[in-house]
Image (cartoon, rainbow, N blue to C red; front, side, top):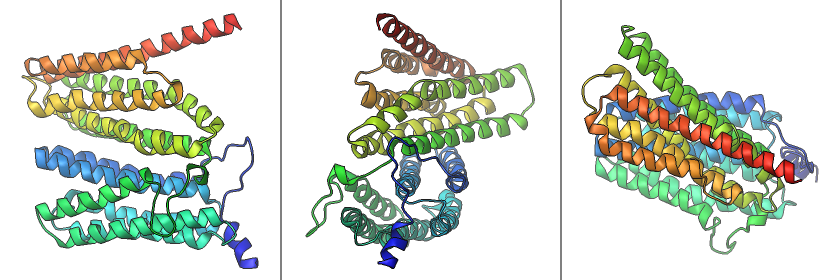
Length: 398
């Protein structure tokens, strides 16, 4: 009984109508993933081919999955407890090994990447299982299900680490597919069956704040890349204009996500009768294109700063338009989960970006950047005005 109580003590206390704050240990842990995001953007920049883009996408999806699984676990377990903090610090070590392996993950450091990833995923699941007392039957069964799925995918990760060339890509794609499919089928395994959404007890405010923090990480990485590149360039009018355009684009992304969306999403998931379902869709899956869009935009900023003149090549056009396009697609779907309608401003922005891409090859990288940033500013201002007017009309009618 004493051992069960000790295990259960690692769980966060569930207090009705009280938001679990993000701890300093979690923020410290996130620093590793700030580095990982930087590695991904640099890898895409240096391997911008169809195969390189596919490989970088797989690496991004794996990094995101590692982070979001840890966010789920720290939603349940209390990082203020020493044992949970030690877990996070151990995961930081694994995360650093994984992050430093990213540029050569499909070359000489594939096995290091696979081992770091597998040990982090399986080890964290084992810790969750060991931390869950037998008295918490549903939580314990969920931990078992998660462990089985992650252990199964680890076989393909490690096998891919030993393989070479296209075989590694295929094996890792299978491993990632297993992991992304598992929440959809609610971690079904023989004998135990599938979990129910009601079993996924989640503190919505904490999950929303954690994912908002990752958006800040990605935006911060974008600003770091922009600033580092600009610092090494001559400060000509073109370079200064490109720098300002990149910063305005990042500010517009922040405004679109945080001005109304992040807070409304946090309130909605906190009040939801099925927070687990909303957390799985809105924060586990739909945040992927949002983060990916920021990373691709950071690559575009680097390309434009380095070569602002001439005509935009295919790489610059794809990144400069594709980054905001991914971001808006993710945000419009994310906001749809709690607003129940597709934001018109975002839809118009997506269409405008599509039109811009049609003419991108005829424009200079600098002009393309300015127009893409202008579209994002238009979306941010439009949404702010429309939601402000709606709130004012509702207040007047009330």
